Length: 212
Ligand SMILES: [Zn+2]
Image (cartoon, rainbow, N blue to C red):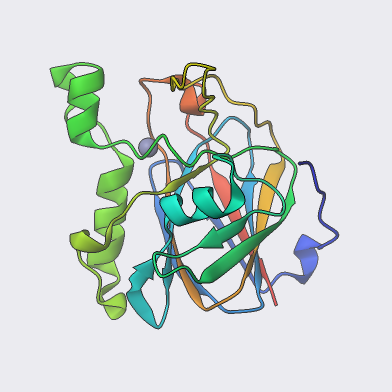
């Protein structure tokens, strides 16, 4: 569902540009609103959410999909945790659809899906692990890495239940906006993948904008 925002980036309290292949790991407080902006279009933003007061509580694809009865996320979607609590609500979305099923790229999956010599290419899982290592204050380990949301990524399901990565439906300037319903750690890998169309073979930056 397309829902535009009335928030003005000039009034934001935090703005960060995240280059492709880099990560974002910050706390967004309950009541704040986070916009993820696809600056140049057709980018995939592999994202995890954690309860900032207890990172053992994290985004749960299973609970979120089951409770809303739909595998895609868009305006109105409620992001639930593995404890069934409401973490965030999507309050605006100009892309229209976000993936819950495709997962994140990893050096291991790159070798299986593409070629053995893709092993050393950058991957989202490595970006998350680097984020956790460089942000010890959160007390997280690789065991905390769970299944993620792919904002802006197009993974349509066929009538037979098949799953494919397709060319993106996002475009320059499209965004998704989430209101935090609890203090959340936002852990985002701006995907560097070059082997499938999720980034249109040209990974580009995203901007993270937060309002009080
Ligand atoms: Zn990736």
